[in-house]
Image (cartoon, rainbow, N blue to C red; front, side, top):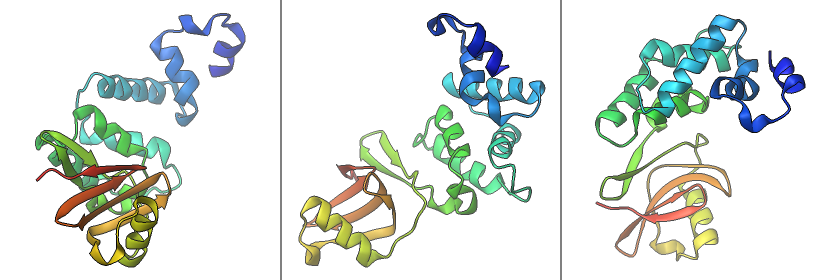
Length: 185
C-alpha cells in the first residue's frame, strides 16, 4: 500500500491522515487489520485519549516483534499512574511504546516538576554511575564538581539525550535532553 501511495500521489500535501500514517508507519503492521488498529491507537493518542492496556501491548508488539515474552503490564501501570497524577498526558503514553528500554525497566520512567503543573518525564534508558554523571554535568554546565550531588539514578545516552537530577548550591536541577531546568519543589 505505501508503494501505491508513493507512485500515484502527485501532491503529498493532499494526503489524508491515514495515508500519511501508512507512509510513516505502515511497515510495522503485517495485516490490514493490524494497520487499521495501529492507526486507531495513533488517532487516540493525537486526540489525548488514553489507550487501553491491550492497545498499548499491541502497539509495543508491533514494534518489538523479536521478543514474544514482553510483559507490558507494569510499564502501562506506571504510565497510567503518571497520567492520573497529571505528570503525563493521555497522548504521551503511546510514545513509551516506542522506547524499548522502558519495557525492561519501567521504574526508570520518573518525572520531576519543572514549574507548577509542568512535568518532565524520563525518556532515556542507559544508567550511568553517579561519578560519571557528575563529570558530565560539570563539563557541560560548568558547575563545581565538589558541590554537585546526584539525586536518583542518572541516565545518559548521548550529549543531547540524558536525564540527570542533581543538587548544587542549595538548588535542584534537572538536565534533560540537552536542556537544564531548575526543579520546582
